[in-house]
Structure formats: structure tokens, C-alpha cells
Length: 82
Image 1 (cartoon, rainbow, N blue to C red):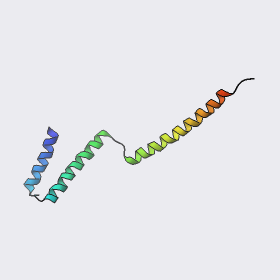
Image 2: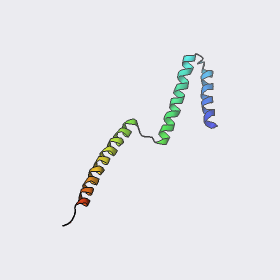
Image 3: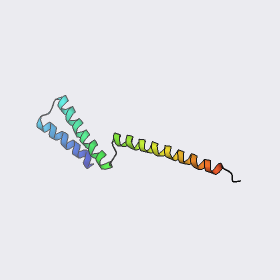
């Protein structure tokens, strides 16, 4: 309830300051929402898009190495002793 009250208080301040035009009100609301979104993302400690791409590439490389290693192990197991 306190978070919604914060947004309502900010909107009330805008009306007090005389920002009545739709465009000004729209930009202020978008700025408030963006700042809240950024705050939530920061609290969640989410990774950026670039970091995710780098991690996906590293995982792909590790999967390739694992497949090569598994192939080597399977070749060694199929050999028979004389």
C-alpha cells in the first residue's frame, strides 16, 4: 500500500506544481515508472543482455568440450583387450 501511496503523492505534487498539460503529465508518469522499474531490477540483481549473451557462448563452448570428452571415453570403452 505504501508504494502506491508514493506514486499517488508524486502525481499530487505534479498537479500542485501546475503541470496540467497531457504531454507533461505523460512524461512525468513515464519517468516515475521507469525509475521504479530500474529500482526493482537493481534489487533483483538481474544480468544485462550482454552478460547473458556472453554466458550463453561460454555454456555452448563447455557443451562442445563435454561432447568431445564423451566421444573420447566411448572410443576407449569399445576397444577389446587381446
